Image (cartoon, rainbow, N blue to C red; front, side, top):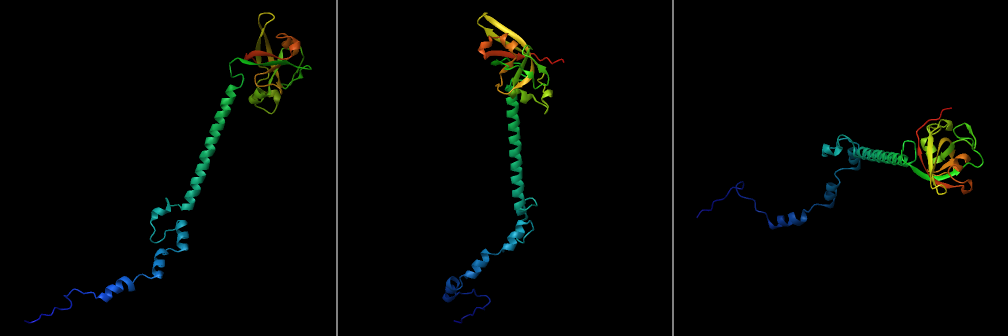
Length: 227
């Protein structure tokens, strides 16, 4: 029986054992090739990418809307700082406004209770700029509300100057209330927010001079001073 030879170009290649051995062991990737695979991008390429310049093989989306990563981070930090500043200012203004509403200013129509004292010695020239005596119907308000109401470096221009206050105190000796109307002419450094310092005549109209300090209630009458 004749043997038909198959042309070499039709026959499938048959790998020899030696070639299989070479594929698995002798032709393993070298260390230099592995190192080259993981270091395809040099340091200069990375710097170029960070500056926003396109690098071959790197998608354009890595440019962050046309800006470099460093620029985006800086803009983000600046935005956060501005937001924090705005929030801080808003909270500060809210607290200041809330605190002003609690103070016994003319805008507050409530009734306040505080200590009543009298000038010793006499009042003389007050912060409002005119002279008074111990027999005048005057008072000094706390430095706290005086400063809160101030609109000028000149104390004579303080909006509280000339404002009228009605003071009431219960007197056990007469079994009823005593009241006086006084005009704001001065600033009391030692007074708390609700305290008033009176002329001697006004104090003795409410209590005995020997008491020196008594508790009283008062409210603004919203009247202005007429020279």
